[in-house]
Structures are given as C-alpha cells and as structure tokens.
Image (cartoon, rainbow, N blue to C red):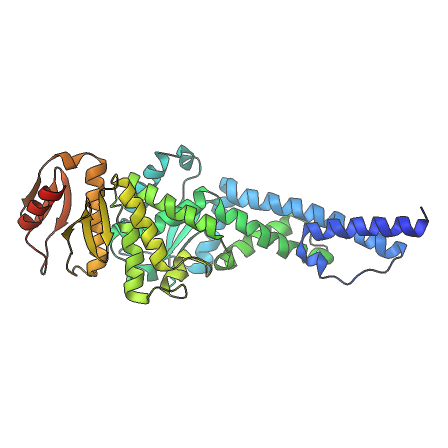
Length: 370
C-alpha cells in the first residue's frame, strides 16, 4: 500500500468519526490532503469526543444531581419570573401532591427526585417539564382552565415526560450540537460547557422537540397518574374536547402550544384515544358517541351545556364517573338520586343542571340499562 493511499484511508476514517460525533462536522469544507490538515482534523475529532463526554456529564448533572436541579430551577425563575401570590398556587400544590402520590403507586422513584415547580409570569397558554423534574406552569394557562381535574391532566402529562426522561433525551442532541459548533473556538472547558448546557436548556425549552411516541406515552401516563390520584379519568378526554370547542380540530392551535409539536395527531384523535382508554377502564361498559353517554350500548344521557363546559365536554366527565363506578364495583348497587346528583352506589355520576333531565329520571334509566 502506498503512503498516499494509506493517508487517504486514514483521512476517510477520521472524517467518518467526525460526522458520527455531530452533524456540524459534515458542513465543514473538505480538507486538503496534507499532514498539517490531517493533524488539524485529528485534533478536532479528539476535542469533539472530549466535548461530547463533557456535554453528557453536564446534562447528567442538571438532570440527576440536586445541585444541578436547583441551579436549573433558579435559572428558570430568573428567565420567566415567578408569579407570587397566585390565586391558583394552592390548587397547583394540591395537584402536585396528589399526582406525586399517584405516580408513586407505580413508580416510587419519584420520591428520589421530587418535582420542582413554580407558576411563572408568562400569559401564554403553556406548561413544561425540563431536565431534573423542573417544571413551570404559565399563569396564562388559568385563563383557559380552572377545573382541577383538567389541570391535573395537563400537569400529569408533563410529569410523564419527566418520569420517562423524554426531555433529557431530546435536549441531549440539541445541547451537543451547540457545544460541537464551538469546538473550533476551543470551548472544551467543563465549566464553559456546563454553562452552555444550562443556558440552552433554559432559553430553548420550547424548541426541544419530543417525538410522537414519547408524546403518546406521556398521554397514557397522564391518565394513569390522574386516575391513581383520585381525579376523574374522563377529564383527559374532556380537556381535548375543550380544545376542540374553543380552537378547532387542527394541530396549529391553542392545544399545540402546550401538548406539542406539529407532527402530532389531531385533537379529536387524542380525545378519542382517551375515551377508548376510559371505556376499557370501565370493562367496556361505558362509552361516549357524539356527546351521548352510553351504558352497555344504550343511551343514558346527553348532558346540557353548563358550568363553562359544552355538552360534549360534560359527557366525558360523566363517562369518567361511570367508568370509576364500574371499575370499583359500585355498579352492583342501585342508582339513586341524592337531590340533584345521580349516584351509583357511593360514586357520584352527574349533577343535573339547567337543561338536564331530573336526577331521578336519569337514575331510573341507569338502573334499567346497567
């Protein structure tokens, strides 16, 4: 083998390694075949490998150590501002406490890294979970949602991302790209890389794209968590119905700002998937079709609009209560009317409002079809 041929093979191997370390290398001009440029490439690859490991270490620190988590928590507070004395502070504390206990029922590791959270001063409709189980809820969310069960769905979804490390995985690639782009400037110092990682994580949280599979997983976990926490499982479908009622059934609307990104299914697809899961939870007994609550395939009720909800949104809450009744065995008891509230055993099903049939009429019908 000639010396020139051997040099070409070495350079090809070095370039392949460089491309594997990060897409930024593929954008560099092709080097000339001389010893000086070869040494430069090798040095760049070594620096890249070092930076890659230091980036991974920085992400692990922010994600897994209490010092890193607290640094990230404080940085987010500085970036977004803290909404002190929010009227929703107590409600969010209740949601976080109940959901954490709900998560612990299936994954006790949540106690090892409790979620850190605050309400921020952003008026857009959003919430997010970052590295290290650091969460923030925009005060603008409460202009749209006030129902605790529905708020629990949104927060549970974000906690699902945190429990499965979705954000850490997605952020790793973005942070590595930013760090590798600075290798030419010799930014391979560990403290500098940590600062890049911290800054990128905080300033670009909304640009970290989570894949469709992870988003579906977070949806499923939200339902699991809220149910274990004692919230109405129908609230999950109800949230998506609310999005549809107010913003339509497309991806580029209010819902996309919070439950992300643009390649996800339509709002109705996510609503219907939740409704199917709640039907399964009921043992197949309870369904919703076109705003009508069905029990064993027969019509029970079409709730009227009320309480700030559409008829369809209320229907999913009725489905959730019925599903809980069947899941917990209350269906073996008689349905009764307690004032304006339909009861099935010890489980409240719905409270009749203006425009609804009387609770006694609904209870009688339920006894006939259950």
